[in-house]
Length: 398
Image 1 (cartoon, rainbow, N blue to C red):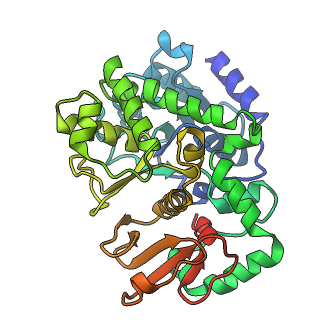
Image 2 (image 1 turned 180 degrees about the horizontal axis):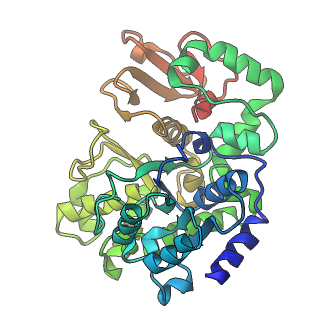
């Protein structure tokens, strides 16, 4: 136990709090059980450390541990937490819970046993808290952390730091918002840089190794995170890797499940759809469907995109396809806090109300001129006009 405290305090002493992520102020930290989900590399651990450094005294009341620590090869989470609580512990932060076999039942036991113990745990975006050995969905409040928005990227670069906007406010006031931002910085070069290498916070560690780290994130997610949450064989993981490559080199990908199953040497249509579902839950891809709600993986998506534009530049052969880059950015940024699904007449339907066509600066409103609440998200413009809005501005929604 002393070693765990020592490791925790040594790590947190090096943590900076110059900038905290968008989700920080959305979380109700006083809740007794909080689940923080997200893809590898988006900053879940950093968010925990920042919260601790800003709000908790570094005494016996607070402890952070990663459940993939070798300590848990010989000790249980329950035993560790029992000793922690016995010695005055109140705030327990658990990282990488999906790496611990009995995570759900032991966390449930701790929650039910100690009324004054507050637990925050992080996990892979794959984790479904209602599907463990114990259903935590009625106990835990779940939050999902996404990669950096364009707004956050600018703040981290010390270019511009302004609050995010709700979608209705942005649509109504886009002209004034864009004019103010463009009066303070030349926005288009920053936007181009963000699309290539600004989504994952580890871009701050150096550009030369950035794409290599993205590929490592992908490999670790498929080879380690997926089998830690779902029972998958090595052969299945190889098929999932091949599937991701097929999607990455054919973007946006319009799936033909029969042909896809044949190329994966999978006779079952449902298996192929299951593999696609794994990739989406792992935040490797994003599926555009007619119905964006629900968890029915058997509903075939209309289109499949990579999760973010940086992944396109890291692993796709499509980096010259500006149309795909634009749509991937728009889908990624809107979906963080809005419901995005297929539009019958345009590219995207958002919140069952707003229709969007995404294109270059010459994109006209011809296709959507008869539709209410319809907008053009136009690339390569600094400031819009009427229902034509700069594409980059949709990076200010979170």
